[in-house]
Image (cartoon, rainbow, N blue to C red):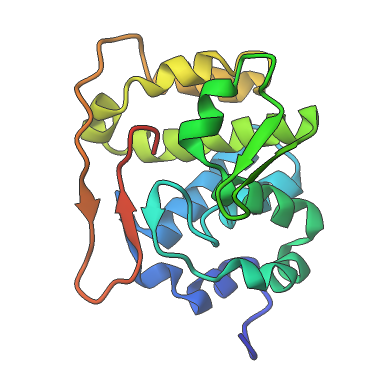
Amino acid sequence: MVGTPHDPQARLAALGATAFAHVNGTLAEHLHGTAQLLRDWGNRDALCLAGLYHAVYGTAGIRGALVGVDDRRTIAAWIGDDAEHIAYLYGACDREQFHPRIGTPDQTRFVDRFARTEYAITHALLRDFCELTVANETELARRNPAYRRKHGDLRRLFERMDGLLSSAGSEAFRTCFPESTPAPNQASTVLSPGSRYVETECESP
């Protein structure tokens, strides 16, 4: 990564984010859109930068990564320790294990799929994680009616986040995911020729 440009968005392009296919276009478009939503909702710079880099290590919903977790120090030097910590948490989340804990007494007991361990996180970090999760899914769904219909059951997860979200984030998911009966989930993959980054729509993408 020697010679990488200084601007965080340009650095994503240098890492190849503009070349990776994603649900609504490229990964770069999705990352920029997620960060912009967080900014529009009035979140601090660190959380917005985390939104811009939330898939840099990959996530439980995709195959592939822009960098490995061995590069955490480099990413932290680019976007700051606070933003990197949130981005790591988002990518490291074992969604099948952790998402059901949100809204329960165990919601601060995080499940890390990279480290293959569990540990406590602060309430503030949980709030950041939830806000980023809603921004990520809202960014995907608002431009893709088929995605929104397929994953309408995300509303139930987001409702369990009540009290952890900003008022703008809460309003956004209620608007984007209206109460309805979701269509059955079906795994699908979006991949363009030559791409190394694949978005797999999981039960909780």
